[in-house]
Length: 325
Image 1: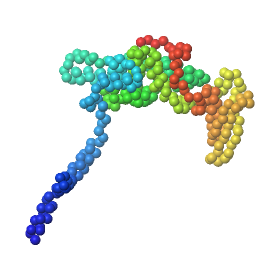
Image 2: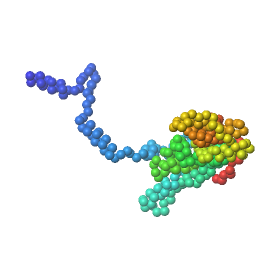
Image 3: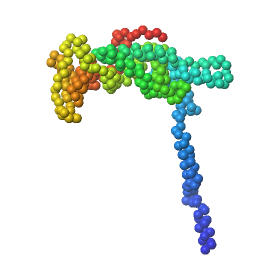
Image 4: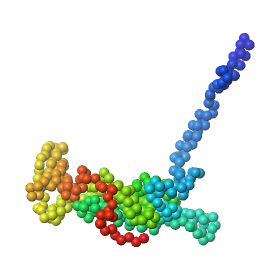
C-alpha cells in the first residue's frame, strides 16, 4: 500500500510528459495573481483617469519630421522654420522663458517666436477670401446674410474643428495639453499666413477655400443666418423689387379648437404665391411662410444648387481687399 502511495505521489509531481520527443508542460496561475490584480485595479480606480499625454512625450517623436509630413499631407510647401512659428503659442514661449529663469539663467534669450503676427495676417487673408467666396456663391442673399455666413466660418469652433481634423493638435506647441479651441483656431489662421509667405497668395486662398469654405457643405443656411422678423424683411424686399406687399391667405386647416390644430398659410403678391408654411396657429404659419418666401427669393433653400468649391474666386474679376504682409 505504501508503494502504491509513493507511485501516485511521483505521478503527481511529474507534470511534464514526454510525448515522442516533445515536452508538453501544463499551465497554471499562481494564487497571488488574482489578489494583486484586484488591488491594482482598486488603486487605479481611486487615482482616477490618467491625464492625456502629448504625442511629443514618446521617444520616437521627431518634430521637424512631423512638420515636414504635415506639409506633404496637405500637398503644400511650407518653410519649416516659419511653420514652426505658426504652430507656437505665446503661452509656450512664456513657459519656456519661466523655466530658464527658474534654472537661474539671467536674461534668458528664447529664440522661439510665437504666432500672434502670423495669426493676425492669416485672419485678414481668410476673411477677405471668405467674403468674396460667399458673395460670389450667394449673389441674391443680402449683405446681412453674407456677414452672418462669413462670421460662422470664422468662429473659433469652426476653425478649431478644421484644425483638429488636419492633425494640428499634436503639432501645437502650447503650455497646456490638450490645447484649447482658441489656440487651435489661432494656429490655423497662422498656418494660412505662413502659407501665403511660403507659397504665395493663390495657394493661401486655395487653402481657405478647400478647408474652411467647405464647412458650408450640406449646411442649412437659415440655421446660420437667423431672421428675427421674416414678415418685415419680406415686405422690405417686395418694396425694393417694386411689387405689392405680400398678403397672407389661409389655404387649409384642420383640427380647429383642439391641441392638434394645424393651419396652412400662403403668402401672395400680385396673385403669385411667394411662400407657404404650416403651423399650430395662423401667426406661426404666416411666419414660416415668410421664411419660405425669403429662402426662395434669396435662393438659399435646402434643395438649392450645391456650392461650387472648385471655383477660383480670385480669377472671377472679384476685387479682393488689398492686404499688407
